[in-house]
Image (cartoon, rainbow, N blue to C red; front, top):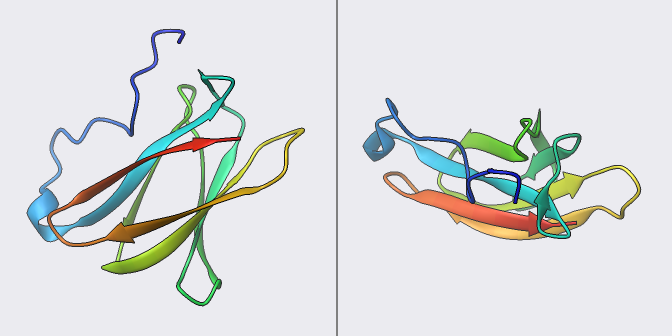
Amino acid sequence: MCGATRGGPSLEGIDISKQAVIQGIVLRDDEPVSNAYVRLLDRTGEFTAEVPTSATGQFRFFAAPGTWTLRALAPSTEAVDKQVVADFGLVADVEVSV
C-alpha cells in the first residue's frame, strides 16, 4: 500500500477529550487516493465542510457530536457516501473505498 498508514492522520498533539474527530482514508483498489475531496454533510444532508485528501489519501474533520455523512469525491468514480457518528473524546476512523 505504498507505505501509507491505514486510518486518518496522526493525532499527536490533539486533546481528543475536547474534540469530536472524524478522520480516515480514501482508497481505490486498496491504494490511497490523493486527488479526492471529502465532504461533511449534516443529518439533513446540508453541506458543512470539505477537505482535500493528503498525498496519502487521508483527511480529518473536527465536528460537533452527532450523526454525519461523509461524501468522497474522486476523479473517474461515483461519489461514495458513508455515515459516521462523532462524539467528544472519540475518534471516528473511517475507510472510504471509491
